[in-house]
Amino acid sequence: MEIDIKQVLLQLLNFGILVVLFSKFMFKPIIKILDTRSKKILDGQLAAEKSLKETALLEKKQADRLAEASKKAAAIIAEAKAESKKLGVELIQEAKSVAAVELGNGGIASTVQIGTTTGAVAQSINIGNNATPASTNTVTIGNLLGTSTTTIQGGTGNVNLVSGGNIVFGTSDTTGTLLVLDTKTSAGDPTCSLGGVYYNSNSSRIRFCEGSPTGWTDIGNPVGTLLTYAGSSAPDGYLICDGTAVSRTTYAKLFTVISTTYGAGDG
Image 1 (tube, helix red, strand yellow):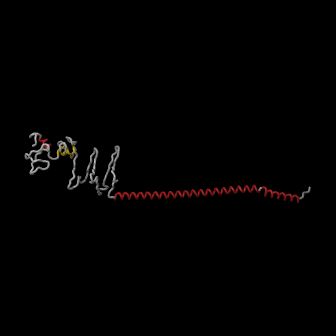
Image 2 (cartoon, rainbow, N blue to C red; image 1 turned 45 degrees about the vertical axis):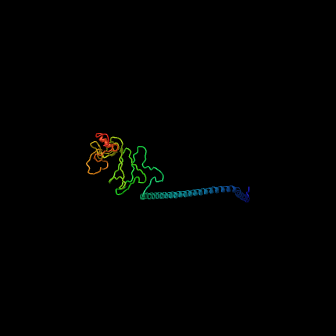
Image 3 (tube, helix red, strand yellow; image 1 turned 90 degrees about the horizontal axis):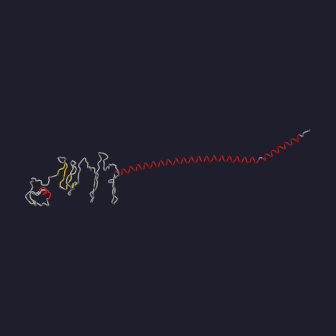
């Protein structure tokens, strides 16, 4: 059997052309779809990378803002502390330099309490304490205006007046200021405390505790004492013994001593 070479070559050529045409028109949509999907995947990867970069940038900006805010807050706090300290020092200096500090000066009736407490709590309240031995304070309690009253009390404890100098009552003037002792209105003396002085209105005597022999004694001569005196008129509280009759009512304490020894009438 004789093969026609030309015919074979022609068929091969036609088959090749058919394959080329088939590949061009048959696989082109599939390849296009694959190319589209690859492009979408690539675009998605690029978008994801861009989003990651933007997120990182935002985080960095946020961190920078937080750091800046923290820095500003620290500066504000430091400035406030410095300003408060400065203001406190100025207030202390101003308080030290003022001539007077007034409490309860509101123009209305008020009560100013210092050291008030309840319960079994001991307190020490210091007014006018010197900071150093070289400092000098003038402490004034109460005033001389109107009918002002100043009360210093100590409950069942003592009220101590202590001074390295003199303890002075009143001032030197033409009117005089009275030092009025405590008054006991009944007979008998209180418990003796050495150096104690009081006035007993029952006996009209100032009593002084000197410790012996009985503790209490009168200050001054007792009623009815006779003294030699060179004056022509009696001093205050005394009578001249010249036989003149005096009233038992006016001089009741004197006649209490004399009694009725020399008669019951005036004498």
